[in-house]
Image (tube, rainbow, N blue to C red; front, side):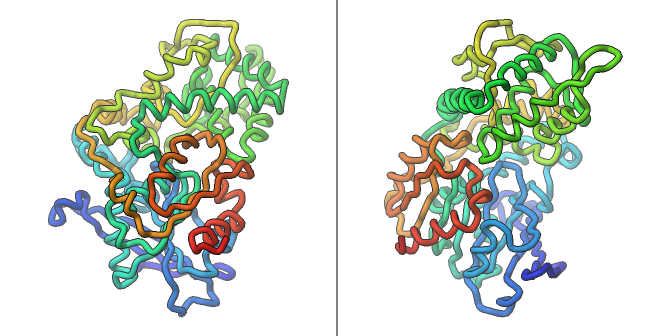
Length: 440
């Protein structure tokens, strides 16, 4: 513990834990993991059960609370909450373009990052739990990738769990990266067309931007080269409750008249840079496909390979050597939630890690993340929110997994998108708590 702070209604306490880089080698190298304890000020000295929050990602730290907003307000009624910066993120021995060269060669960096998947995160949690709770089990709330981690937790350390709450994060137990993206591209198409139904003028606006990018080099304020394919990735917004509206407002003011003719406006470029940047979350790109790898095979840039099966996404060519052949005449479709090798050239925060990313894409020998037999015997109370036509996590995969985990109770809803635990906040968490406690 290195610090304690107060906000209105909250007491926040810093915790730092030294954990093995490789939990199978506890006497070897250690890294530091950070977590923030949050408790209602009125219950600061009460003996409360713990809830640990696992953030989505991979590669994102836990949120930084400012008051009792969203789901945290409901959680603090019953729990002492731990917001975990998963290894490599936030204040937990960060893994970035600045720090990873300290590990040595790209091969050494890739070997290091192979220890940053859900199985290691779960073992970090168990190390921390024994320190904080006196070996009492705790509740896990897993959002998106945090839900993937929760299913790994149920598979390999169920003794540490009192109950599990999952929001938009039931993974396919046997879906490899190819299967994940083969299901994802049709969803991206549906989400794009639904957006155009809501804002009919946006397709023409998107086509104009893409045509401009096919003919002009545009560099964003952070140094990112905005190619057509990079522009398409703004579709990542369409998986959130307000994302379609945000995309519309972004597209409507894309151009500025300049002495050299129409160019992308600085305001547009700055907003796009903030959405597409991977400077704060390089692990999202480096490990995104590895979170699905557990059959021993390499992922080999699955999203890029599978995209070739969906030529409707290639309505425009690109300049700069990263483009595809022109295939005009189709709809302009957005993508998002995919990682591609061209990003290692266009994104400045990823360029120094290019070879490391390539080695991770080529890596074999990935170990299983889930134990279907243990999940079928599960005795831990589990409830999961599954969002209808979730952009980021395939609904059909989630429903199959829900049936495979003994005793799991589901809430399938189209009231929220993937960010329901943020947008719905208190209501979403309250619904899951009632389900897991059999009060619904």
